Length: 296
Length: 296
Image 1 (cartoon, one colour):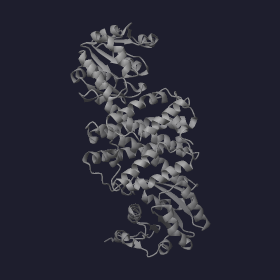
Image 2: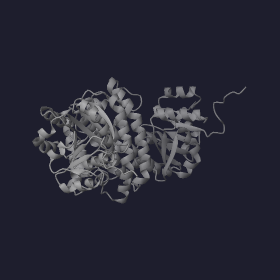
Image 3: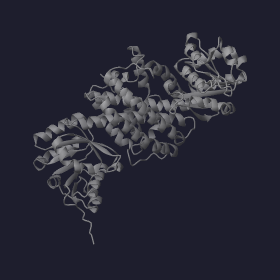
Image 4: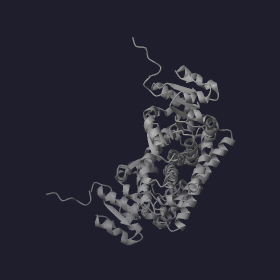
């Protein structure tokens, strides 16, 4: 008879600080992968479900950090992380800290400097998933910072989802993360506006959704690689869809929003950008030119 | 020995008015499918390449229309179409007119009324393709208006790409067309801003493009169906990505644009929309709530 051990002694112990939806999902994934997992949260009641799965609750952040060579921290802001960890530099020194709190490249770099001052090997992480996706094939985490610490702990981090190294500049994971979110928010604006427009005529969003999904996938796969080539090469001339053609089409689009009782606010700036592109002499260029025009 | 006939006499003759890039692509597709094709363009030199492929050039729009039971018109604006066809109602009466000129639902409905007054079976079309894609599996055309005329000529129209019937309201093809373009323009805004941000750090757009493409496809396929269900049902509460979480993340995103020398103009209205959503009590709702908030 085999009794399933809650922890596999060959697996690296890990500490998780911050047990919101995402922190709890990370701790659960580590437990499922057999890592001895120590957890801490400011509101102690949140440790309950994880303790039931085999996690060890710690009474203080210092005690939690001391339990493992690797600590993951997942709070709401970098200010929260600084406030939490600043008193515990002695406990952290020489142990790897992976911070997956959402933030900016500047915040990540500043925090990495603080970690370096205190002899803490630091990895910044950007999670490209919602908590429900953690440890599924669709989830991945971008990492940057201390590459040696990353290589050491990569097998452990792989329990959370795919691992993507972005570079030793600790701000890079946040930069890649925010660049991808930026693309997503544009898509979200387009989808919300598109559904508002089709529904203004009494057509169901669910009826329209398959057409929209296929179209957006086709346009993404069709536009992104060519736009990237144009941007990197600086050759913006196109024979497919010039800025002049798009500028000519845009007033019809905005007029239709208004005719149909849909607000134009999310799309007005695109019209202004197209107008500026034409005014600055880029009528025959493709949409890739807009990337240049977005620089300050 | 078999001599290939330029025209297959069993195929419906078709007339194409307007030989810009798109009109020429349509005429070429009809010729390739064996349709006797008559062409006319205001600037006569544009008929040359099509005549070389077997098209018959007409001297006047009336002569062109009289040559076929089906006429496709593809000009720049609906005003151009009205100006061109208004003198030729006698020639057009009883013949099917398919207008694939870009326009709004209102323009399509107004033009359809004019056609009906003059006894012209009218179909409005919205081409979901660039000219290079015509007659490839990726291209399709949305149709609305006179359903009987559509059913009669559908086999001919299929030579241009997929055919999608949207309804007897002649404005529907334009509405579907513009709703899909709206989704695409959101995606374009996101991609342009995303490339501007990643390149601000000296990272190549081509290096980043595969990550962006995979992410956008995953987000599109993940977000669109659930958003559609939420919008149609009116149940906007979410446990995945609340408006409060997105509102909290947005200032970091905009601060990063500014830190990295990227303009914020395309994304400022989304921040204002998220702020309004929270102010109006929708903190726990998902992004589907934005569709409601975009109504005037």
